[in-house]
Image (cartoon, rainbow, N blue to C red; front, side, top):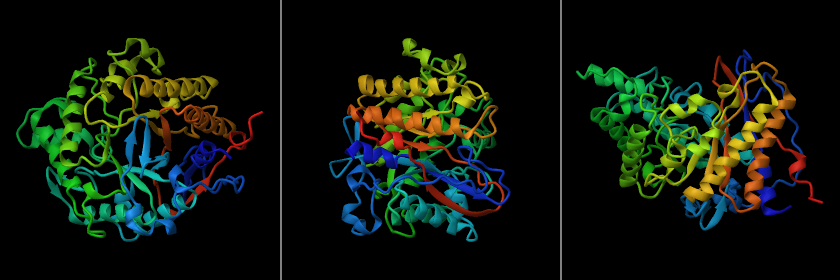
Length: 424
């Protein structure tokens, strides 16, 4: 098998989580539905971004991920992202009764070749909060994040750590506004998170606290730890109060530069969904709907900010277009990916990760055939980019909520034989 085929075959790995109450679903898998793995020929070497844990016992072999043109590299060799999203690691690790689930998750993920996990390095003012108020931290919860990072390192899973949420879950920008008002400010919009100097200072203080944190399990400062793949400025930032994009662009430029001033070693990404804005009117035709042009994000312009090292894009056709499943979702997914890969090559000169994608089994018209076709579409599009030496650098499948009492979590490998058959 060619190198790129071997690499992306293992990119077809993803996680399913099993729950007592079967209320949660991930890519439509529920209860104990299983997928058979196909074939033994999916072993790859470390230079494709999949590691044998025993081969990397020496920390000298565990180096920072860097970029070289439109590729990720480790020790000068190409690295592709075989990723997954698990936002709740810190919260689970904070409770000794569920901490073992974090270890189990990483062990299972490593066993099927997953190499990157995207998770939260924030929980602001909520239940089991990391940051209880500006610059005031719960040390036990910080130790829980330490544990998650140390377990990732143990199993050679790299982490994308997101630093704040656009949405209310886990606090988000709304919590920062609440803190601002509690201090005597008169803030009327959650989007003032991006513009008010006091809230900008709150965010910077959190960034500094995380990057300068010394892990209590490994004694490694976060900003020196190769386990961390990248810092994500925010999960899905939007600033609909300024559709010109100027407010968000100013925030991105300031915060990317600030992160780099503290940590020049790690990669930085923004965390946007990928919507096109005013700077590229010809590209807005690829947006899923007209509203996407009005949320204050601007894919190409955003990623031209100094300090941003790679692009991130999300894919949720069932949320953005319609919850009624149709072939239009697949056509959108393919064109959305190809447009962003082209832009990453032509305008940005950087890799692009499709850092969230998925489909809900609750969508009208959902069936397993559609699910498999969607996943196949994502990976075939990445494979086509890789064949040409393009910017498509990997993906991370979406995550489900840990509702109810988790009995156990299991990583399974999903593969499509059509991607590894010899071309005739």
